[in-house]
Image (cartoon, rainbow, N blue to C red; front, side, top):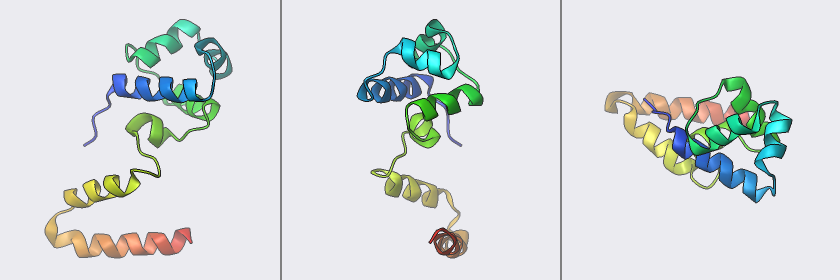
Length: 107
């Protein structure tokens, strides 16, 4: 099971915000929260609701998966392998077939 790490989430939010050239004030205004609350989120001092996190992702033009778990196109393969390792060995063939079906659906 994945454990949320608020400090890491906050770091990713901060890095993305800076990469977009935005201030904390500007992002918090667009998200609809106070600047101090946003600062606490970036420092990992405060959790936020899914609504707020979704709005942060929209403003920063990022995915929730990237902000929360750090998953992006560059490391998705590694993440998939980690998930695969969690599958019991006797169920792995079925898992691969399910993934192949998903690929067909996504094409």
